[in-house]
Image (cartoon, rainbow, N blue to C red; front, top):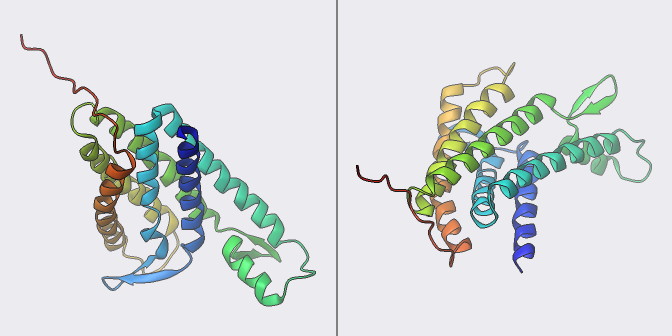
Amino acid sequence: MKDTRKILFVSLLTALLIFSNIVAIKMTVVAKLPLPCSIFIYPFTFLCVAVISDLYGTQTAIKSVCFAVLAQVLLTIVGTIIVNLDNQVSTLVEANALQQILAPIEQNGIYMPNVKVLFASILGFSVSQLVNIGIYTFVKNLTFRPIACALSILIAIMIDTIIYVPISTIGTADVNLTLTILNKFVVGVIITFISVVLFSIFTIGKKEPEKKVKAKA
């Protein structure tokens, strides 16, 4: 049962990362500012990592992050190859839809993924998740685990946003970086509160670790 639940959370983390990068091409408007729809999905990757770290340890959490990144890279490579194969069976509409999702950039008849956005996504994800794991592992020994979860996720979301937004919008006109970062962070804060509730449910029954208290002189 324990291994099944671990596989479930690792699979969910991987699926959330991949699905976030797919739906990122769909834009919505929050406070009159366009934001990718992935903003409502991606922050829950931090919840998955916090739960994995809490239930199965730091090393398992790090391996889960690496697995998710590897799965994203492999999907991108395979998807790019598939999109560039000769279309023999699919209708033009189906082929174009697949191309828009997996490889929206066309150069000299060759379709490729948006490397800039993909790089920003993977870099932001990797760095922020490692920070998420490190902060949670440290803080959970000093305070209650839900508080450690909230703090680690908030800081990780901020780091991810600061990395992702400037890189992914390089060369893009009329982008207000400050407002974009602020909007993404505000949405992340709201989702953090939801994540803490879910974290408490997923880790229910686990005892709080003994808090480190400095000995009196």
